[in-house]
Image 1: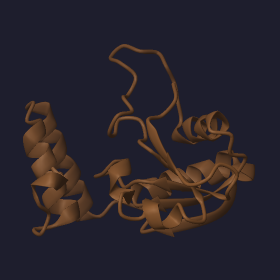
Image 2 (image 1 turned 135 degrees about the vertical axis):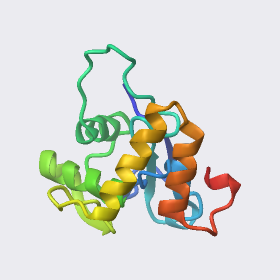
Image 3 (image 1 turned 90 degrees about the vertical axis):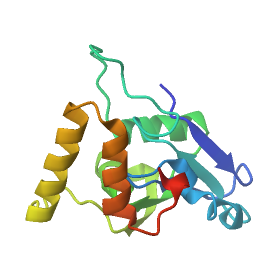
Length: 161
């Protein structure tokens, strides 16, 4: 499966791969991509389960890793390596890409990465429990509101949901 993505900038220019936070999709980079496209080939994917990149269907035996998905996307767009920028969950995925496919990562920029192995806090465990309760009850809208309130704060507008 090829991840849904946007490409900006000139073919052959140095590439920058922008990886979104877990409460967003590739649109979080909309304001950043045009200025970068003057000097870089800008690649903005939706990771699986976000935006237009679906998760494997229920009962699917398809195994995947985000790092392998990204390496395949770079192959598909003809990019051997990239400056990889990851925000929050995207930072965790950027670390995964650097560990599994180090030759694909020319430089690594991490913005508040969700680093593997960092112990949970009482607040994060409470959030996880609240989110699970809402999703188990089928209240996806409630889970979205919880995520927006927790991760984006009171100034987030309706477009954030």
